[in-house]
Picture 1: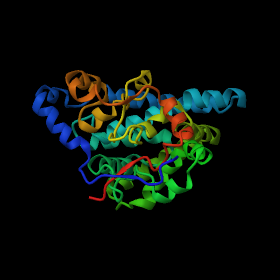
Picture 2 (picture 1 turned 90 degrees about the vertical axis):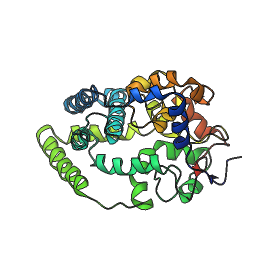
Picture 3 (picture 1 turned 120 degrees about the vertical axis):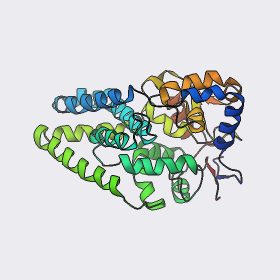
Length: 310
């Protein structure tokens, strides 16, 4: 029977204490801190590829267009999401403003100006994980009650990108500051110019790719796999499979939450340095299976999250 209420914890999110314990036992982990010098090239390469390919794919017949949008467009869009995620932790440059500018540029193929707002919300997710007022990664009570049962969970999973995009505005409104406005203005100018020069068809392809990237797509399985409770007494879950190559190692999610200042490229080294802290934890083997289990398993649903009100 599907869980009817959230898990509640009176304890602090688990990563703070584990980080301290790991550093005490494995101080060499500090050597992994720092920037990923290759991140700026990956980010810009993804942006150029997506923007340059869109007008050509937009002209294809639907029987080519849709498979390409799903296999290539959605995969590239999702990796762009994850590049912005890395940049939200200032992992491309030492100077924060450079990371912000690169995130704003990387934002272009995602159409909506979200990079800086994502950074604001995502850092709250890290430091206040499970806080029902500040962690907008958590489904709302109304959301969990409405999308109960396999058919409704399928509908939610198909449209999960929309919930991640709009939920924060209803749960926890933030005050817009300088960088938010820069992001909005830059994006409006960039996407208007892009559409003017290459056509509406390319813009529609970008939107289709984005929707598919956050829908029933293997890479989108990481949204569910990271914090939905698949095993009692565990709040965060990692995935060590091959899709990490396309996901900038976001699958190393316990490792990432323990040390968000370590770039994704070095998270496998973290796991090897501290196997006594990670090898015993339950880890997912397939993001596709995560989506399937979420939809079909009556014991897993939107209530399968840990909340705390402290």
